Image (cartoon, rainbow, N blue to C red; front, side, top):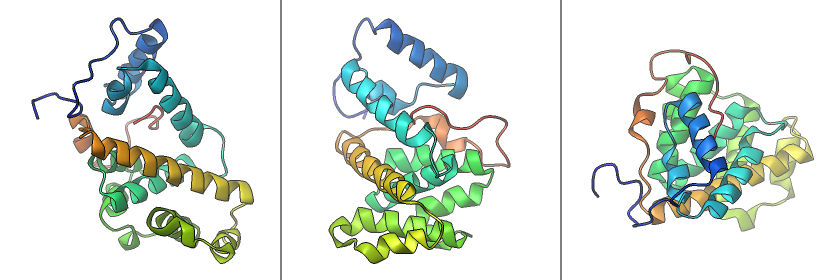
Length: 202
């Protein structure tokens, strides 16, 4: 793969980019210091980019009984099981940034059971893992285990939706050879975040 290639496919961005897309990319540069490659990869078809970002922003940033950190933890655990290079790197960085705990981000990528988790997080990630490995085997007892840890039925929907989204995006990213931005590798590895959360699609 040539240097600075975003994916293994030859799909250049729309030229010119729509004004709204250009503004969105400018926001990414302002907030993150870069345009995440997943967004740049979709820019060959801005209708697909818009659909992707609308779903991502709804699942990961909209009000929910799940915190932003919990949603990022789900993203990393799913991506780790699927061995998605892009999403492990990008969302592992987000876990480090939001939590201020580099070790937590590493554990989510490598073996989430090695992390120091509370009972709520353990139940949530067990459910996300089962969705990823064997969704057809989920039964009412699995949902009830979440309720016993304080999750509402709406929260259970959100866990399922986040896990389902990343199972889809992992497969696309791996299939097209999507490369993570180099900046992700060094983010938030030496203490708490300098400011802000991971607030646009990564």
